[in-house]
Length: 426
Image 1 (cartoon, helix red, strand yellow):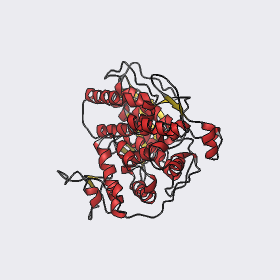
Image 2 (cartoon, one colour; image 1 turned 180 degrees about the horizontal axis):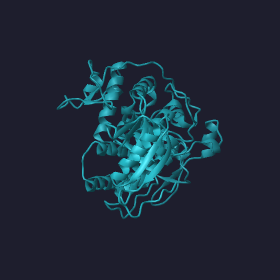
Image 3 (cartoon, helix red, strand yellow; image 1 turned 60 degrees about the horizontal axis):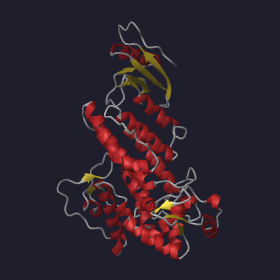
Image 4 (cartoon, rainbow, N blue to C red; image 1 turned 45 degrees about the vertical axis):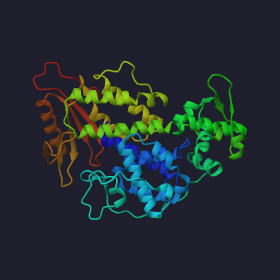
């Protein structure tokens, strides 16, 4: 999947989630799950580097609702140095707007070199925001928009906030959230630790206190397992057990997606041999294997470098399915992506796209090319020119776009002097 396609899908998901949690935007759907606020914040700060508006609206939301957030969990959700810099800068900005001891972030000291642009395609910044500059990130000064609202605690996605209003911001609210939403009769302390982002020892202490209060029960044996009375908790929350939201392993799912997005973006900008790219994909999958396994997404146990790119694509699609991000919801994005990523005998397919020119006529372009291969006054002439180019360069596919930019048709073209031309299977 192209990096730009993945970015669009992840941004769409982030906007859909935050529009249900208090950011000013029209929600397109109602998510069936309970969201993990801290995991979503760390994820969104990364994907919103391609959308400054979402980034700044998220800062505004955090400023309004910071009393409902766990700074400790925000830091525990960071799996890479980049995560730490983004969270550190966001907390420093919050502390500048609303000085509080718990928001103070220890800056790593003056950055060793030039500041890294925070946003993709960053432009010249006259007055850098010092909270972000302290963490090596370059962006313009930002002020709160004041557009955000508190989360609607009755919405299924906001169960975490409702439990925090009852139990306080801390480990007990997170343990109960997982026990109420996870489709399992009993859960171990180790699983709860991974789902909540707290240490196993802290989870054990919290469970002991909840057990004394008779709000959870446990099994007796070598490894204690825990459960909560869903009917009783649902009654307290003015719900039926069937109305309790679904569970997702958000720290693992969103963490894996961040790592994959960074990997695909880095590869798109690097000139490396195919075997190096494949080796990098294999290393990434091996590093993500434990988290993916915990979230129920299997990685091929006999993974090889040669098969790693296809396995990475498979893992990515399964991750997106867990977020309910599917081809049926984004047909235009995925249709174009799938066409540009098709391969023949393991090699990228030779393609030319016939697209409208803003100034008139039609261009023939190769995917990712900065300049057109050819220009024609009419659509028919452009199609014929595209066929000639593909035919002379070894055969491949001519992809035909309409005046609205959407793909209308495609045509398989045989290579020059090929005695066995490929059949057009349309």
